[in-house]
Image 1 (cartoon, rainbow, N blue to C red):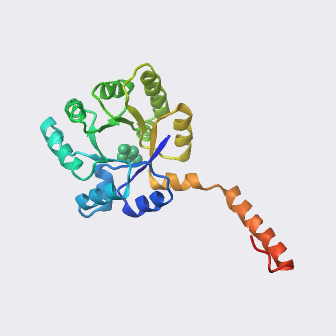
Image 2 (cartoon, rainbow, N blue to C red):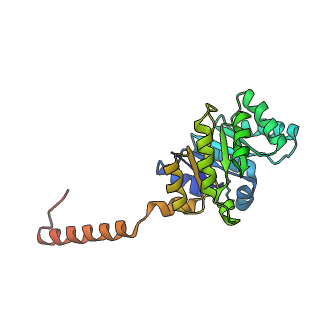
Image 3 (cartoon, rainbow, N blue to C red):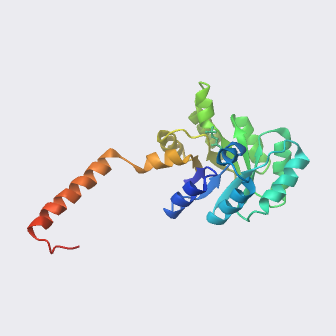
Length: 221
Ligand code: E4P
């Protein structure tokens, strides 16, 4: 399973990329707005830091605007995936950009049928938003199960990119289902790294090592 970071924060991107954990990045207009400044600079920088796919989202809602913006976004790097919303114009843009060899991520997917249509339109990724479904009392993970079951019947080549992840258990469940990608807010990735028993275990190992050393200060590994 690939791990993407769901952020436009350069510090977080550098931190987890340096740890070798990142296969890609997803952004959206809200994440760009959260960072402030000129989004163009951030977009350019992210595509330089990250070797894998970087999803950059259009803000036009009509077909020709999306095509124009998609092509401009693609100029930031050959690893740019153009993110378009799951709308009729978005799907039309997905079809056109994909047929020109520009990879597309169809975002704001909330039903299996939307995922099916995006796959048929040539999307490289579909982004079902599971946390937002949970928020309104629907089972977000069930959507991943259904999309996965449908995609297994065909040969679309479209990857399931699980988005709107809220906590580490979402990641475990998505991995059990076999989702291709999870995109994580930095806070969720940070939580996945830690366990209190790891911290206590390491402290105790080091205390015991110090005891051994106190009897023989020359001991080294
Ligand atoms: C995915 O590409 C989106 O940027 C993101 O996962 C949305 O998550 P949210 O529901 O936490 O805003």
